[in-house]
Image (tube, rainbow over all chains, first blue to last red; front, side, top):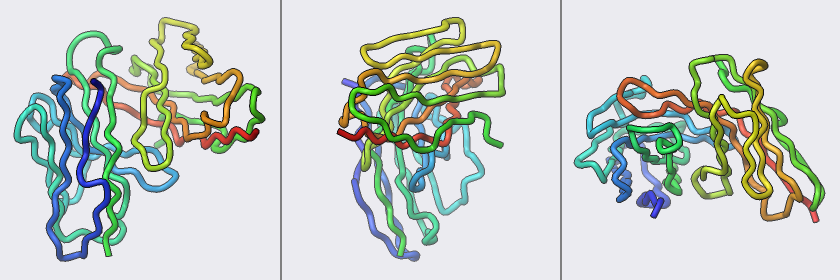
Amino acid sequence: DTEVTQTPKHLVMGMTNKKSLKCEQHMGHRAMYWYKQKAKKPPELMFVYSYEKLSINESVPSRFSPECPNSSLLNLHLHALQPEDSALYLCASSQVAGHQAKNIQYFGAGTRLSVL
Amino acid sequence: QQQVKQSPQSLIVQKGGISIINCAYENTAFDYFPWYQQFPGKGPALLIAIRPDVSEKKEGRFTISFNKSAKQFSLHIMDSQPGDSATYFCAASMRERGGYQKVTFGIGTKLQVIP
């Protein structure tokens, strides 16, 4: 099973709303990632958690707040977003040890977010 | 700074033809080179990957050619099919201190295979 599950698939929110994106994997991966992807662009890394600790925050605005409650779950809390934050938000997971071939990132289908 | 350069950005190929996508990188610290395939409305999926000490890897109709001295690599799709129509991202990754791989993506190539 190489599945990364993201919910919801679509989300529409106003600029004053608070919402959360969820990501779940049961592959035993200890690294989890959030990416943002705009149309016709490659994914851009936002956050990396390794062993449930935040390892990378790529200068993401504080209106995005990640959380890793356990090794299988990753959340992205959203608050006071701007219309330019509308994008596909992708979660990925990977192993953290061993040969590079085992450290491939597996992506979920993403959450399509629209900020009005 | 675009660390992985990918071309072309779009490609139209006849069914049965060969699709070729080229990538180049600058940072010699990269230690793994995956290719991802992304269909509309889906997340990227690993297609094939190669280590820098290997010059070629083939899986079915998909082949990666890797030239370490030139810091270039390419994806060849033989006998291209309409079902191959998707966006392809080359990527380069390196292991970070936390044990995870940090992936740098190319800009993507939108491939259309016409019947």
